[in-house]
Length: 138
Image: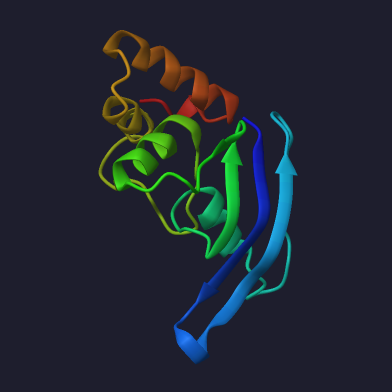
């Protein structure tokens, strides 16, 4: 999936107390390309990833996936569907269900995404193998 950001700005706060965290950021990440986001604390790294992960919305500018303007998408339902189908996101904080297995944590979004039950096992095994965690399947 190709990701494009065009003049993305993100501000927090209201009126005179606004803080600009990202200012007209443009970025293009090609399908299969690996990118590292580096910078000091407070530089906007997490904000950038939250915007790309559709966990937050830009103040201005556009974010596109495969040429489709995602910032034009408004409803939580539409954003949830895009996150479920197109985005893998590893949270800094634990985003796992603590008492569940690795397998169950990986399969849960597939079930919510209405994946065919017959394909879930194969997809979970494949994804875990890709990230070197296939030995953790219980």
